[in-house]
View (cartoon, helix red, strand yellow):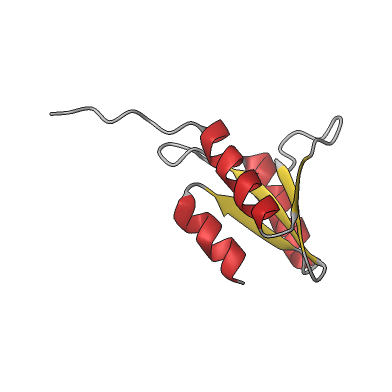
Length: 96
């Protein structure tokens, strides 16, 4: 059996950044002091579309309880939230 190298979260994050900026958007690393589980990236696309993105590695990346809480709160406020684990997730995010 050949073991495939695992893709790191940083690799997924770099691809998201590159693809968003290539389309004229902004992909900002965010952090909320004292707010465990806050989103990794704020994506702002031309036309005013704003997405809070959680980046996870493709294999084994799990959303924590704190992150689930933020996702639920933001979604209840009708804010767009995305979990990005791979190129397909980035494709889906950029197609909307």
